[in-house]
Image (cartoon, rainbow, N blue to C red; front, side, top):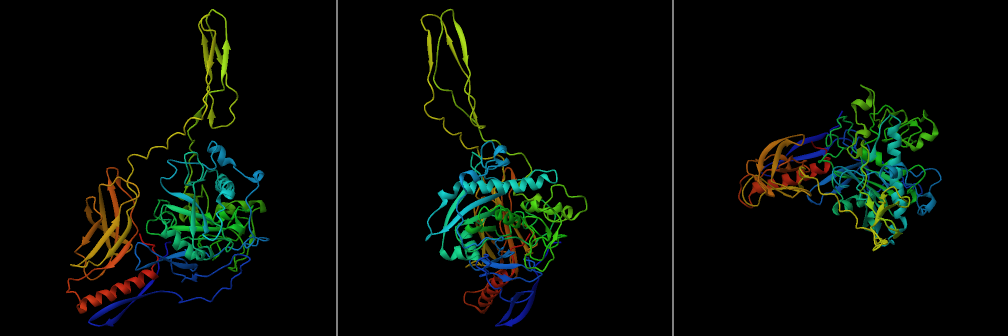
Length: 556
């Protein structure tokens, strides 16, 4: 089921030895597709992939990897989605009016927050929301902040209402604060990035928006596209996080979805559409899939006439347009029938970026009632003064009891709290957790000596007591090479003049964390500087760079 990128290897003679030339299978290019700016159909920077590539015949673009500047990674996209009927993406979309702001069932579940929250709000697999603009455009975040929260809540409602159709519960694992509000990062990018999706992706990755345990949904304050997202052509059904390339695989470049201003917060949410693409739907092997990563059994948030030539069929009622997967047999079901397609292939309802658990409740705040005065005569009496009714679901008002003990003290005044109590501290970092993946793994030929020199940066979360280095001669099968103390480099002196692939994991008392991204290098033979052999090694590295340009990062 898993599609592998076919690589053709041809050996050619070189000065004093052989060099390896690698090229991707499939067509070398594709006929240009005309743009349609009104609909947001802009194809600059995209090219058609081969049917056997990881992109499965869809579009691909190249990402300059900052940690390995000598190679590029392939990213897959279905291409730009056209604007709905009656929408011109070039027209500015204002924020929602106050009466339109929706904090639906998700708000109730989260006790006052915009969306459900889980754990620390940032642990594990998460969907990160981003507001992006160019430096030349006025920062409009404050004007849209309430709308962004509302649209995030509506995204979650689409997910959960769709899950309810098969008797389940699903919520988006947003990055949230301690009050269950989605964290929306604000990023300023270049004008080129705001007019070109591949450029935007490269700039976001260079800013650190490249974590493989994140899906990034970007509200782009531009009027170029309607929506466009990444995905991977992997219909592997194993729901274990990291197995499917759409499900947090550490070897797959971080996936980003973009929605431009003209399509923000529409009645049929483009944000909900692009989210499913980020989660891996709709795979072309699905029963009702089109060849362009959508579906043909209307009505459905992912189904439309997408230019693939597929014949659309009206199977579900038109009101189902706001929900996922008509009949729940193509890409989203919380209860697929045994042996059915979604029981054996990739099912986005199993995504690690969604949760089937009830939402957590943020800590409540106890506030005394206003000043209360009670006057009584002896003998001693006790009066309990009830508080006024609570005004919000997240605030508990405690009763105040005053006691009068005789004529010497006939009046007791309870002083109110003049300022709200401080916000509860953020929850402590989880204990007993394994480290996150090591960052920025790179491989080079050592300046002195032979083999391959590896270096990496510490994981974002720890603690770390050591590392394990894995090596293989193919990207699909790596085995343990060395177990190291807390160091940030390793020289594989045993590597000969062949192509090797490496990955690194971090260790602590809780166990072994997830793997770093994969990297590769051709080993250096022990030769004198300036020799013919060293020149051949250099040319082998260049050939390897070309191979990495052709290979996607879809390595296990």
